[in-house]
Length: 195
Ligand SMILES: [Fe+2]
Image 1: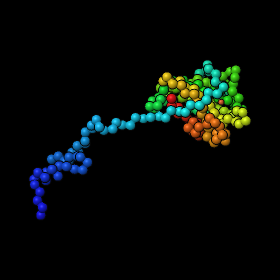
Image 2: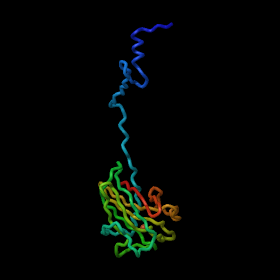
Image 3: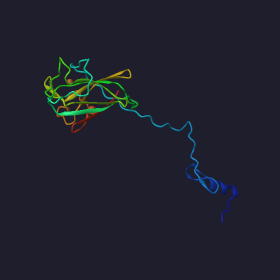
Image 4: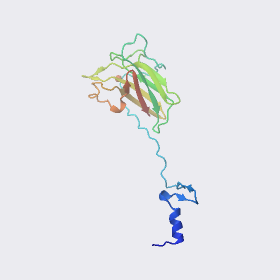
């Protein structure tokens, strides 16, 4: 029978897997202390929303409002809502300019129909009641339904366009990007901007 020394026996008895220690008759797991070599928790990163052309129809000075429709408005109603955050995923209190065409694809060049400025709240949330815009000819091809947006925040400006799933003109549009598709469920359309 192999004999081991008292010192070796005590050493084996006190050491357990994972670096914990058995102390006395009770069991106390001593967690390894964190050192400066341990990796820090991963920082959250939100990918910036892709910019897009402003187009020729932006007009500054739109009224602040969250409802762009009334009972006489034609077109498929949607509530477009979501958030604005920075690239560290922190909410931004800021202003968004939204503008888009009516249900026939025409922009209001003299008034502010389907144009608004909306404030985000302390959680970066926004919401507007509007319609899915109509399509319009750009040269020989129709542009897909889209909503323009402009956000100035944190010393940066984001000008972009939001698109709708399953629009047959998305694929051929030179500015369309899948990363700017709204999540559409019934009348609920959602998009999270990252500036
Ligand atoms: Fe447009």
